[in-house]
Length: 410
Image (cartoon, rainbow, N blue to C red; front, top):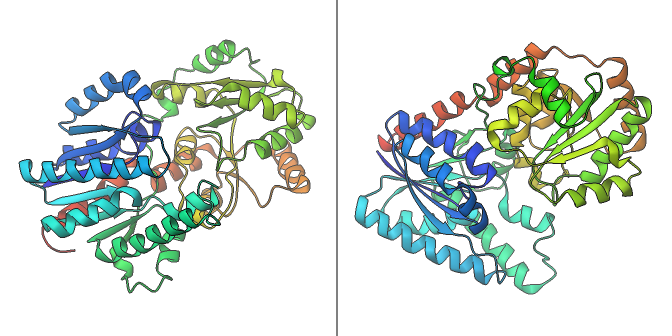
């Protein structure tokens, strides 16, 4: 079968390396002929093109990278979608395509056109409620008539894509449940839940040398006996940096021998400013960017993972990539509730502590619990990662969908 995969995220982006290439490599190994179109940010493309080219070649994939256009707002996106439309048409006419698999709403709008024009099967990989995320993330102010029009346009297109798709992927059970309330006459069997999966062979604590913890901590100037919290990923829009700093301060007041490591590509000054604002001693914070191949080593050197996400309507459909990676490394997690299936997973596998709200009293309660009962069943946490987030499960689900669509069973 010939599959055309489209993504507005780049393969050179962290998400491209963790949440696109692993799936597609697994599906290619099963026999799918996959051609990828992605939008690459020039600076990241220059830095990681050689790395991605190697992965593409090694896994028998094809790749057409397009340049991501950032400015001016709105017009730049229209230009990118025009480029995508032309590229899809060229690939379909030149190589032939059976299934078009589109990641997020923004590219699926163009893929819906391609489905209709070229009589293709369409997989709508939602990855969340995109238009609502733009509004709740304060990227679109719908008090502005232009952004109100754009929001309404994409919500209508979202409904059309859902109804026209041969199959739909939701990241969360909560997101699937919500879509089924929209009155679109979509059968429940048309939606498959596949969370942001993790390569549990790559994120495997048993593959990390015992000396790693000591070496990494020495590199970061952290004592071997310190309690180390760790956060990984971007800062801003959805991730509540100030609240994480406040929680760490609450814990540190009870246990002075604690540090907070933040692995991010963001500017360190943003984190330092938050520390100062929230009365956290800067000397307790470590900020650095980690290449993907070293992420398991840093996670193995920590004791507790921490992440807070702004709870909102659109986050009903979100699945944090970091959660599966942290659990795979047997790290107990402190996170907040009402974000996709996050709290459900933590409770099901006793994988940490769920903060009900960002109040001082709640932080005090969880910090005290952490101090008095710091240990968790790490084998159960690892098992939860394998069972709920395991990449092999995700690949098998996608492969079943591919086969069913290709054989006209969906």
